[in-house]
Image 1 (cartoon, protein in one colour):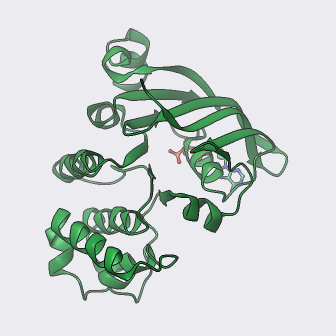
Image 2: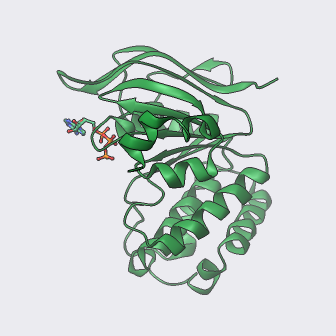
Length: 238
Ligand code: ATP
């Protein structure tokens, strides 16, 4: 039986008087890769930022692992086990790859487990091992995305949320990153992926939520939604 680790209900959020999310309801099951897709400006980033505590919701609930987290501060959300890989990677300039990765673990005290997670990340993305001492922001877009995902893993989360995995990256790299997500998920980590590229998202995720102008318009198994003519026409150009 699928057990939800994240359950969102009646979520309303926005910026000042501008409401962006209207009555959002969705759930992510423990152990799965789920995705949120939708066109530019649909509200995907706003949704992730609200989950992570960067935006305070106007109404609704966000239950993570049985506890209400709507309105919790970003550091509390991280401590409870949700790591956010932001759009545009947001690595720290002037810091090495290793230091950027370690920033993901700044709230942790279990030093030897942190070292294990560092080894896992460097094995997952060997290029980061080679670039360990390089300023992270001087790497290519794909390498920076690997580092941003690695930083998320370094907090040893129970849910990894990723905003736009594929943005601005060549298909070969997107494929590599998709494989990495499947490998990470194989360790038992639940993933919520937000993507504009529906093909990429449906390749890795088992369930999807389609957001249109701040509302969930469709949801279901990606294998079923991927065959839906409305999805194919609106988001896959088929
Ligand atoms: P994209 O893929 O282009 O990032 P998205 O689906 O992630 O799109 P959001 O970034 O969540 O969409 O934006 C949803 C709406 O909220 C848009 O109309 C956008 O203009 C608006 N918006 C985003 N950030 C702000 C902000 N800081 N202040 C006011 N409005 C904002």
